[in-house]
Image (tube, rainbow, N blue to C red; front, side, top):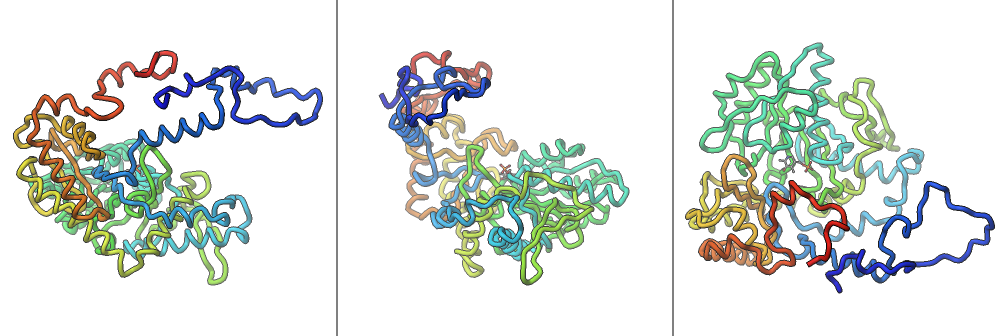
Length: 476
Ligand SMILES: *Cc1c(COP(=O)(O)O)cnc(C)c1O
């Protein structure tokens, strides 16, 4: 019964709750509204609904259940105090169209969070309007475009190294730029000679993901910055994965002009499944006037909104995802200045521990120290693919790492343990990975064996998606 679809539980006329007759005679529903029975919706009791969603949630996997080493996604633990504080009615029940006087507390959160991010990065100002990392990239690129517009320069190209996150070239294209790809050297860092040859009068900026998607710190950033700036171009920092460097460097000291951060990764707010995110964009001194409107300011007594005429305008309704910002603010305050650095040291230590422990079973294409994540290129003996390894990990109770990304290696397997995991948890995971490396290839190729749904035909699922209940038939 718990595997029944909610449609199968449906009984004609069954309702979740009923309301007393409202005593208004001649009352009719608007003609464009339909009752659930007319909509072919399941008719079930409240208890059926609760069981349905509770059982669905148990079929899912979350970081509160087990190890979730999904590279590039920073699936760190989300302290419950963040949730508690974000539920406070004073934050929850305000509306952005209320008068400033009644929004002072929420405005203070934005203001103070902005100050904290500036202190961590060296940037002059941040906007919280973007609702995701990629949205932050688009906003940052719009700022870059507007910067050149206002200088009456028409620059049309954005350079993106092959080791960048996939959203970088996509955002540049969406923003109307031409994407120019720059190769990397053997060690995974940007080939600066190549870069020199690509830069020309049309180059608006370079987008650097640092650490790159290979988990490597770009060693020649200062040289890259010199190449770009001497050409009048700007430096964009994809700081979605700030976890590796948190509290250790100023992005401005490396020469970056514009950056975004993913609050929902580094600053611990629940994410995944397309949930709410926040991709604040920071700019160095001299570019603040270009940030989206409105911004929160403080005159020593009162918080107030300002708008700049030279701004790129508005990039989201109101002020982005406030609740995500609030949770990130709680996270920063609970660690404080003294402990925020521990995040990066432990995240890097954990990733290097996994790297060193698995390098005899999994191919390690870049053996230098990694930062917050490590990328393997599948099993050394290639007895099974990375997909097989990932599926088999499900049998051991783990969420698989990111696979087939970055695109630089055929069998990429990208592990990001985060700072939260104990040595015992990492050892258990390493043990499982080592066992898998020795298992029979047929067992791997047909994994998973213990999950509710077995190996799916990905190609068929993508080509012939079954999206209507009626087409599914009985759920086996
Ligand atoms: C996750 C990520 C992004 C995109 O962030 P979204 O919130 O998923 O849009 C961009 N760059 C890097 C390096 C990332 O890890």
